[in-house]
Length: 251
Ligand SMILES: C[S@@+](CC[C@H](N)C(=O)[O-])C[C@H]1O[C@@H](n2cnc3c(N)ncnc32)[C@H](O)[C@@H]1O
Image (cartoon, rainbow, N blue to C red; front, side, top):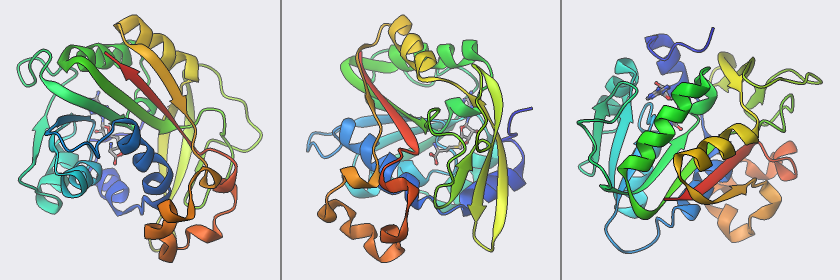
């Protein structure tokens, strides 16, 4: 059984999780490949926004408008209470954006740690087709997930799958997240090899698909400086082993 994101306790646990590795290695790369530093106005779709941490950062850091959508009521409740922002609109959706987000209406889109939560490839493909429909021609879509090639490695705050175990296509996989207070939040993900993402993106019509696998050693000291005080320099496995994978594709 996959993680229940309609369970308020799971949503609170995820909100409490300190997502520093995701910020340093994952979200920063997403922001770079979507070229959010561009000065032009932009509407960004955050598909599966959860508690709104990333949507709020995009609004605060880059001043972009964000359409933040999720199918979990409790997640959106946390987002609206804890991270309201005049540039962020939180919307509850089902598996479609129809009626909420028009054709060719957004300038960029991201899906962060959502597909590992969906055990059905058909549902993932539906979402990717919906994102394609919503994007303007030439706009970029970026997907961020835990890296299917580095399962079992203990990173500073999480472990994705059991050490030494090989996971098959679409197989369930447990993730252990360390949350403040020494607790562990157990999530039940699905193992999707990179080819699932590549095929789904290409079949939806996306072009120029690229893969990024950042490690700590691929960042300059200046890029890491804002995070320095938080103990990033003590990380071990993040130095050379990529915890995450990012796909960037163009409509
Ligand atoms: C691990 S959380 C990630 C939240 C956020 N993207 C982040 O990086 O902090 C996964 C989120 O995906 C949402 N989700 C899962 N399946 C979804 C679907 N089919 N449509 C919309 N949201 C979905 C869940 O409700 C949950 O809020």
